[in-house]
Length: 232
Image (cartoon, rainbow, N blue to C red; front, side):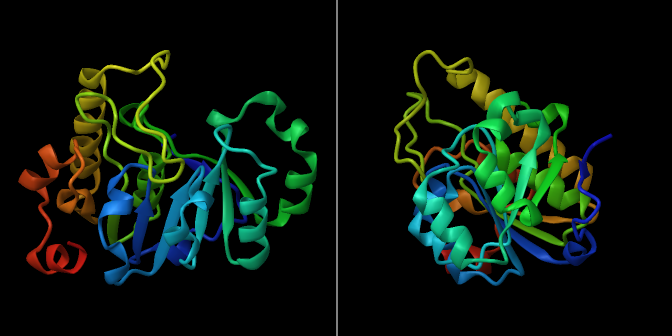
């Protein structure tokens, strides 16, 4: 099974629609994605730390083990944005996450959906890659994405949500070669699997950061001149 999601999740609303997916890579901060027209905005993990995303009518956000469920910025955003749906990926949920955050999971139980949006080639590319896979499976017509960059050769690309530069040296996947292979494989495979029904736009092509998917997207699905001009 490629994916599953809670039965009460309205899958049909995304068919033939355009979705902007914003990850934590530096290109999210470097390109003017607000200038595009899209139907829905999705983001992940610590999205609530980024003011530009907070100004969006965010439709879906994934949460898991990488953020503090008691962070007041998250609570404030949820309280003032009742349209935001919360996706919890079951494969990335520690056993004690729910028990340690009972108040959160009780308070927002009607907005929380559980799902699996994984495939072998998403590997450690991260939550925004899995959101792309979900959007493809829901038959989105267009997917614009930023912040899915990988790291530069010094492993110091800054995070657009937390502002941390690079990975901890003790991280399991801390070699550029590993990231290059994972990111290029993901970009190749998702295009090969879904380009017959979904258009992809790697907005990171315009950024100044080291955007690994560009090695593939510039060849197989380069940005149109119109999109390029709008976001540069």
